[in-house]
Image (cartoon, rainbow over all chains, first blue to last red; front, side, top):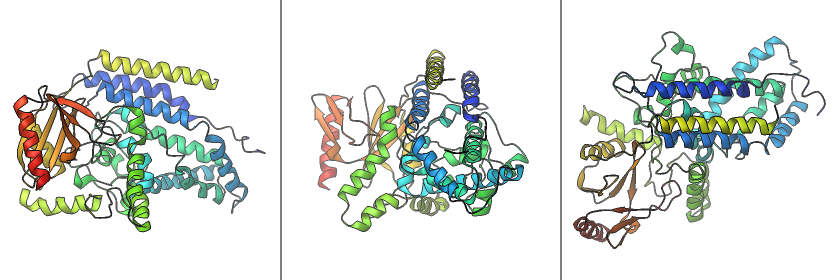
Length: 305
Length: 132
């Protein structure tokens, strides 16, 4: 492994875990006073499912860590630039990691193969801090980590990439709340609870928007930004909401859906469509993709107003 | 800290938070009301209208038939609702129970009691729907 562990950087996720627990408990107490002014909402079975998904994701990735680390090391060994580990590399890594996250996240919503893993995070109909911990069990197994490999290939030390991935994950915890309203100028540059509420909403207007990790600038740059509209309360969850709190069912339901569709596909093109087309794509066009949902919503809008 | 130590702490935290959720009374079972039916359908299918509906005895499940002969299942899920389009083939009758077989792991098979008259009505309408 040569010098790959010479940089001793903190495990920010491990350090933040007790804080996660404390903040969830505080938010639960706030949710007891739910009213028109305080929309915070908890459901014990839903929270249990979310925490089991989070715990499971940590366990599942243990056997994969060696393979993933090997892939990073291989890319870093074949790096294009000698960037070193100076302060400016940390600054560069922060921006590159955050942009990488944006595209990973966007692909995770727009291609069913990756959506099958990411859908887990959106499967709760609640939006509270426990939802942040509802993490995929299959993301790395499905190859989600490959999005970050080019950074190592460019010459950023894997330990620095892991540090900023961890910081991004920790940052994204606190934005999963209805307890915080809009945050003024902060909203211009950073991902906030308001921006991320929109991202978790299934309202046609809000679908597939605000993919940001830490900085909202990527959504503003790449045309996926939308402001939370006070007149349209987010409706959280997924298009076909689950009818179960069972973690195993939550973890694998979309994979089962893909398998079923692929086995029934009538052509190789359809197999590719079911795997890499947008979620909701079907051979006969009978199902609804985000584009179709938005088109129907736009068509119905003038009549409704 | 060792890996097992970290896992033990995570498990303890998980049990504490989940226990707190139940103690604070956040375990709910939504009772479906009539306004819920139209609101939920309008959210998911803005161009459809309910022609007929049936509510289960405990008001945790509803079946909706739309004017274009499609059927939807509305089920309470904690304090929220979950809506699925279903086909008449996914419904069967077992004495005075309706068995709904949604056939995907995200929405498990379950049974629900409807009023006896409702069952006959549901089956009748479903048969017509299937024939149509």
